[in-house]
Length: 137
Image 1 (cartoon, rainbow, N blue to C red):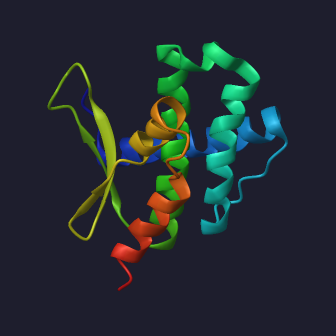
Image 2: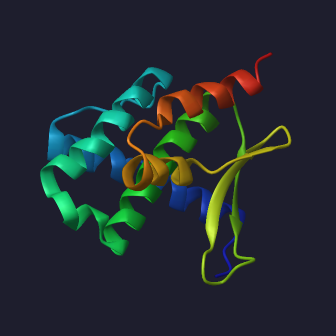
C-alpha cells in the first residue's frame, strides 16, 4: 500500500476523529484530545468488551478498534509533543503504523491491542505517559 506522508497523516487524523465520534455515540464519553483524556481510552477499550463480548475479539473489530484508538493516542502525542506517522509494510501480512519522534517509535495501536486482547492490566495511559517522559527529560 503506497501512500504519501500527507495521505497517511490525514488517515490517522480521520481515524482519531472516528475514535472520538464512536466513543461519544457508544458510551457518551468525550475524548477531548488532551493528554488527560488518554485515561479514558483504557476504560473505553474494556467497555467495548463488556458491551459486545466476543464480537469485539473478532479480527476485523479488533483491528478497527485498536487502529482508531491507537490513532487517537498518537494524535494526542503528536499535537502535544510532536512526531511523524510511518507506515511499515515490510511484512505484507502484518503491516502497521507507528508514530516516530526523536529516534523512538511508538506503536500506539499495538498497546491498545495488548490491553484489549492479551492483558487488561496493561495501561495505554501508562505507555503514553512513559512516551512523554522519554521526550521531556
